[in-house]
Picture 1 (spheres, rainbow, N blue to C red):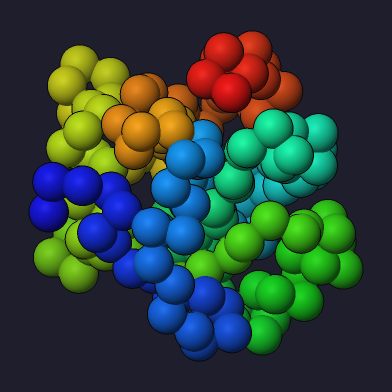
Picture 2 (picture 1 turned 90 degrees about the vertical axis):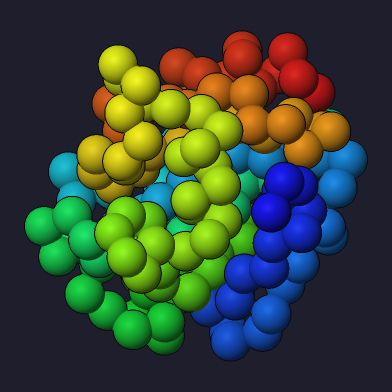
Length: 159
């Protein structure tokens, strides 16, 4: 697919959702995990979402268990953890693979559009972030060490 809006994702509630629903918004797409050293970034992501959603920011969380098996829970456990621990209100989607033969097609697209360090395609760890502009262009990939608050100015520039 050559257009991010052509992709669909399943919510934690099991509903199919088209990314077309986010057309015209800036998207920050993140692979997440509940038991990772970077898990406190949920707080920063929620802060960004709360501060900028009215200006058109959508944060989309995609749980993944491929890195150190740090997202072992099912959809209900993930939803409860996110709500009770970090009061996450941004959309969370069903657990996916981001690398390998079963990688979600959305992530294959994101990795093709924004390569990592030294041209690497693979996602290296949890909380890798992809920034997508209002026209659906994948603008940049941020590594797990890039905290949400540190990339706020780059997000605001697109809003």
